[in-house]
Image (cartoon, rainbow, N blue to C red; front, side, top):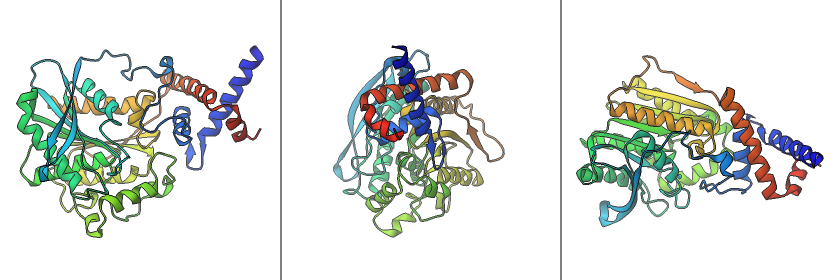
Length: 385
């Protein structure tokens, strides 16, 4: 029995070491294990990964969660149609701050929805003590630009008009989103500025897409394989589907990085990931905001991939990203935001100390779980046995 246990531990350790080794750099164990699982179809990319509860936790970091209510409904948009939406809100009379959350998914049918991003939406609602409204939006290729942008703005207008009915505070509205949804969040801020409202107090952008133009960006070249959960091929599909005509690539409501005027936009928090094709354009957008007088904080999380916040139940860095965003929203709600005078990207290191040991232990436990599911043959061949 002891020999079997030692052998299993050795195989698990060798597998994790192998998964950590990439051409782009050495990955932390937890990142390596999750990427291996996703890329080998051992778990679904829609975050339905449920490892043993002893290692997954609830994503709350041990904090008790306030009681929140969930409601699904429809929001009317231009052209007489409707888009689906979900709302999480605290119990009580409020009025509560409002967060509009726009989900990622490359603007394309089948790549993301309010359902695939429910864990982020729920966690931000719980941690920020805010009402979080997450609208869907009509997707490409059936619906091209500017449909998604206009749907996102229509949802913001709906929230302002109906705030009293769900105990929302229209003087404290934040927009947020990830990837394509990060694009829509900051684009919605531009539209609201250009059309005289609704007023937005802050924006939170997780690894946002900020340009459809062909510009030299090192991160797009280095991390374009798709192994880090976003590929060059998907980015081209998004551009071909959502912006099929080249003039659309230059529009400020698709490529805010190249917009002529970014002044007057809400204060921003921009979170990027080290191993992500969208890293550089997110950070360059932050720098442009700063140059145009928009207060901005920028954090790069080392050792993680595109979409890492979606894995916050099983990744400490994901939890840290959610916590940073929620704290920023709370500070905005209480008019307590502070920003550095000079632009800088604050680098967030992978978990250290006890947290680092815990992450590594969990990574090995998850790896053993995956090895058991997949069978020894697959991994024996990988290890050259």
